[in-house]
Length: 386
Ligand SMILES: *Cc1c(COP(=O)(O)O)cnc(C)c1O
Image (tube, rainbow, N blue to C red):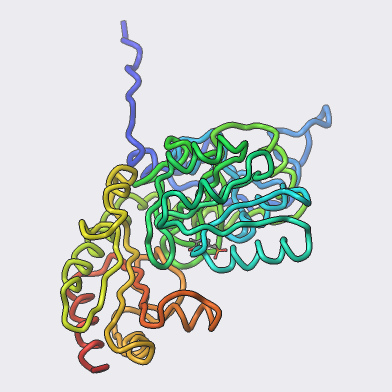
């Protein structure tokens, strides 16, 4: 008699590599199909054949990508959007006038721009707090009025680290939810929901996809509660769902997430260590360095590497920072992050004159190239900019 199969408990890296082992029933293909249909036929009882009715709710390929993301994030469900900002806007759309939102003083700048707009046009109140001051969040929340506490960790572009467990307890004490922008720390290294967050957010444009060829955003929830139902409704009404082809590319990218993030992390750590005490460098901001003020928290909540994002403050001010960003030959001068190719950016120039980011800050998104080429490239650019 044949024994029944013993069910293996697979690690997330395995589940990611196989995109949840969903072999296509129609063909047996290993690579998932791309379903692009905008509408779905009903059966002879006029019922939907599966759960699909219309493309604006998200089709099969979108649902597959969401299943992979919810699984890796340890969440109950995920919703994919056409961009990170579309996901962010949807979350803030759940606020009523008079509600209060708390967000970091230094955060993804377009997100801050949107919060300002809501305070001006929608009667939403907002407080921006200093993420580097542990008491600041407690002072920023208003019990009973704060609905959403938004944090970002590590925070672009200074890479400050926030303690998610502590933030969750402050948010919950005030009756608010905690939403975490985990863009720089994908689920291969950090799972915000397990640390107490209610919503994990990612710009899927970045590490999740990893190849700089789609824009996307995702929200993942710990439980499918009324807030989640409202978010699902908002996405359908706004039509901000990710398209099927993008979802397919995202699934493809997610299959190598663990490898990519691990390599980017070792590369970035080597670069950070190399330049930390360099004569042309004032400071290196990288949570993987023991000298970084957030290192201990980062070690506690990031288990698969500290990522490929770091910033360097060059000696010589804005001009030199911009020169270095122009002179690199391997690092490409472009915004965005989390791709397999390394990017360099003079952040102040991108954010504009109102930005509080240091003039001499260069943001690096370290990719998966040979780290010796990356270090040599920065060395030659620094030398040329002397
Ligand atoms: C890019 C980014 C976003 C916005 O995502 P888009 O996909 O560009 O809309 C939000 N937060 C962080 C930290 C990001 O890097």
